[in-house]
Length: 135
Image (tube, rainbow, N blue to C red; front, side, top):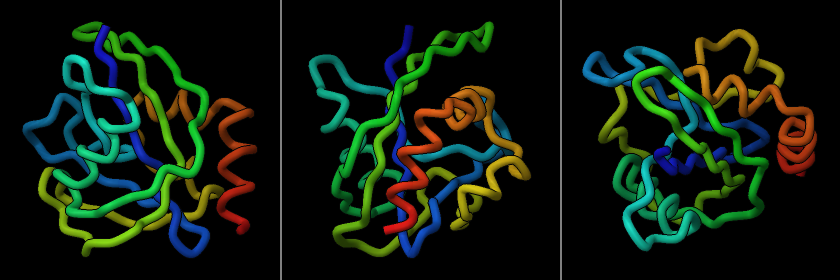
């Protein structure tokens, strides 16, 4: 099972989502950005590294969310989410074709990857995310 982290980056009450390109396992689907942990790397260090690599942003982790496991058939992942804020940097899409900021209530209208759909369907995760987006 692959250990994958993702960031729900909050800015002005909205969450950043990114769209995969045509060469991805999840072509043109939207996701919360992140990536696979390296051997011996903590999940917290992984998400900070991945966001720096993919988006050229420095982030601060605010809170973890409930992790989920998902079987895509071609791979099984454990998706570990973190609520984050931007500390610095300027957003640049290095691995994705699009990015946009959306409100949590807009999630149902987005074509998310399957694991991300499960992640945001958990009541506990939605409640925690709503708390942070109201701040």
